[in-house]
Image 1 (cartoon, rainbow, N blue to C red):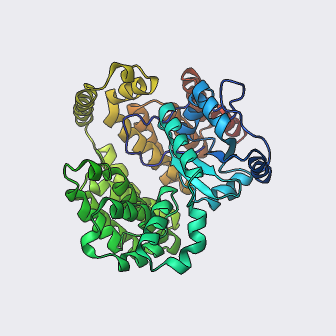
Image 2: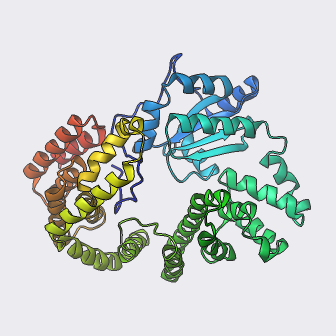
Image 3: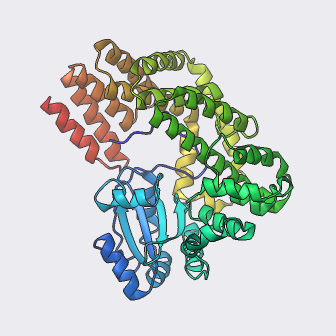
Length: 459
């Protein structure tokens, strides 16, 4: 079962739904998906002279489920997509989906790709923003497919034009638009452009779309740019892509540190990250120390430094257990009040959306639920990676506390797994049965929970 690790920054309409996942949406009122191999869909695209819309999902991805349930059966979506694209779906973790996701550097889900019949990437969208946003992105893809200077053509001529600033600017702009940054080309381009020109809208767009590392001049320039955005409407619109680019550079450096098992690289990334958080509060309600601890714990897990991980996890668990209940309640009330103030000016039509209502309900106990998620994540990591009885008992205590705060299906599932691993079979079965009942009542996907119950019974 895939788990959310250490919590997430919560965005207003980003809700991880647990409804059952229907991959296909067929019939005249929705999208008709082509069935067959990747080679076959490319051939079909050539026959019909259409680009391909590719939905890349995973079975555990909440927004993927939401898009499949809400957008794919929609009549307006079906009309536009069936007329303009060959539609296709791939599970990023199964079959050809693994290779295709790697080829197009897909790292988040859902990712929507618009691809030519030759396999060239035309347009990319990460996440799901609702039906209207999906239709808008489809229009962008249609326009990109008709572009007389597609990225694939520019790539063929890059070598002979790499000293031409206008050509390279166009090349990098299009690389950024499709989510295929070229940090090396960006470094070359920066040699061609005077420093005085770096804070133009065009060049900030190029920087944010192609930055490759926090240890780069591009990172420095983008951080400098944020306070300069001011009230200029064109520049203000760049705030989100600039921050997205900076965070992408952060993730790249983090993965490099993990791949090389080099804590010095991690330290350098975190130092640079502090420069960003000093300019813009990207961590929401999470403190800088807590976020850095999360990075280090995950680093130790990924590099199999269990002593380093255990030390930090024990410190974090002790901190979470020591938080007074009154403090959590006060924070819940503060966050709820802030949410109510922020949403007061939203139109009533938006407030009637199911996603908004679900998010509003979650804000009743936002901080309490966040701490419960943190405790559950620590407990689950111990279950997965440690086998010492003392460690498992410690994890069970964290899991039990998470249930005090939030008796959810996911938290009960962790508790049941730990009980089972500690040899308490009857209690584990009872906890897992309760988890299944809760998830069923919420209309959630029961497959993983029922599979786990069967495994617990067999032990």
